[in-house]
Length: 325
Image (cartoon, rainbow, N blue to C red; front, top):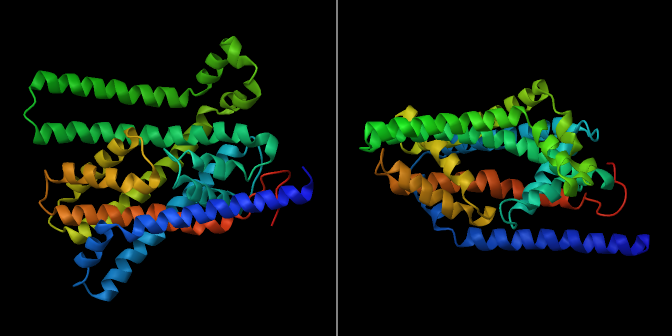
């Protein structure tokens, strides 16, 4: 294929991705009743207060994905050196791809196409390490919150509850030990003959030292704190009678349950709303406010970044070297 045809094909693919993303986003937003409920809830609140709260949540969204870009830059540093701005471009581009692919799988493609062609598969492995770090925190905090929830709101026999706590501790330890020894996975793959020929793609797993993994996990923790704060601000703003510890417990459970369910980003709002409604009913009867808060965070954290990312889609080069800008 000549260079000219590659450019044409590349442009057509990018245009198709952007058109598809905008079309699906439009269809989802135009029929979303939960966002309408959010507008109705804040209709009587002074405009200045609305702008201050929503503006703060938007700033936290930018901080959240900015931290993810820093994490991505660090994860890939052993494979290819990229600037922080390049990392930001790739993160937002990945978010655009994620909205119409199952389990955010497109996010991998959206990011690694900003790397040199020979390093893209290795980039997928590096990104997976970061996602495992985020999953560790989600599972650990979620398991703790779920144990507290069961203790407070169920009549579970105390022996069963202690058994549940013991299982939760083992569950958390497994994820922590596995993460800090991610190089074990490299050794396991090398021990199998049929995967050995692909070692150039997953050898990066053996390069992550515990000190580096800790730094990555701290970035994951920072992100967890940021997007937890977004939920906390909106829930405390619209349902002020909720105790702040109850909000934190429910947020951790919400993240934990969401992470275990397969979903599509655009339709993830249904999963989020049902989960939030089910667990929050134990601490409040403001079901409409709970669902509306969840929908607004979905809009701010997923849809707005995906729209911003459409600009960066056109900076991807599917064939050949990157366009450095």
